[in-house]
Image (tube, rainbow, N blue to C red; front, side, top):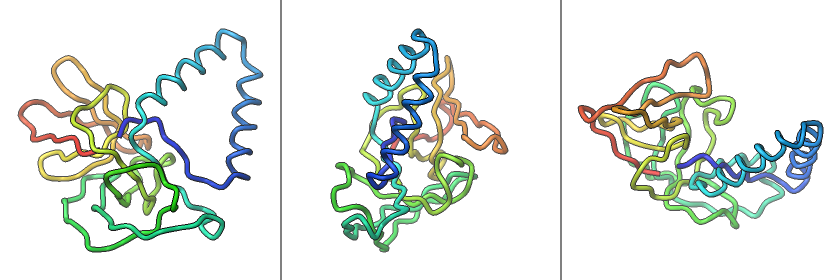
Length: 174
């Protein structure tokens, strides 16, 4: 789940977001604009998680898909396979997994109950957002590769970072 996130929102909301981004970017010096462009291009190349914010579901054709599992944005969720289904847009990007977020550690980017579509991954990349298992529990966290360990962090500053080493059982899912 590398963190180039695509918001699945209505065209009206999308144009408002684009206008805000353009306005902010235009107010910056050219060097800063180039840094933002380089960052966006780099993040787009790492995209494998799609944050599904379906605020205007009635305006988007939807389909039901099987829910893979609930994933913790908090203290960890034991991996129970689900027989539930959830609605996602008919034209959603290609994905391998459908998760529902539980908890608020990744707020404000991901909220409790949000749907995340993930692509199967084998390895972490530094700075990405991933779904992974850590000693049997599933998480959604930012991943920071350090010299001898992996640091997992949250967007919500109320949650402390935690670390993984070769002593932990860690498996990348998406």
